[in-house]
Figure 1 (cartoon, helix red, strand yellow):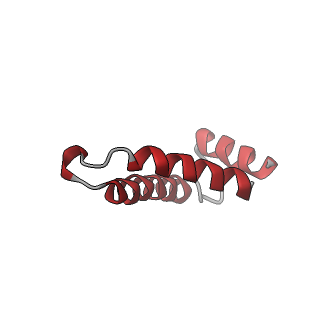
Figure 2 (cartoon, rainbow, N blue to C red; figure 1 turned 45 degrees about the horizontal axis):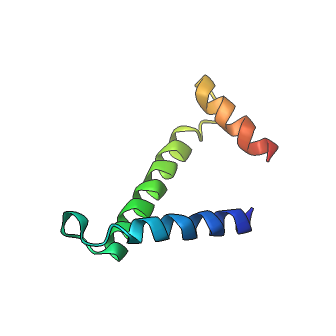
Figure 3 (cartoon, one colour; figure 1 turned 120 degrees about the vertical axis):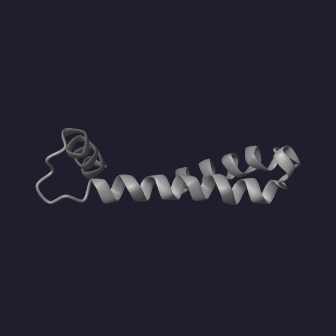
Length: 69
């Protein structure tokens, strides 16, 4: 799993670095911005799905899928 995540992160970073100069931001700023958005998005999903009784069916599905990994 770690190898897959590392490979994906490298490809994502390369693609984002090619945005160098777009919207007045350098490539490394794009990398930090987008990877930060991904982190915040996953944190929100984790916070919403941490309910102990899993009332939300979509959250229950998310937890079951992750647990099967």
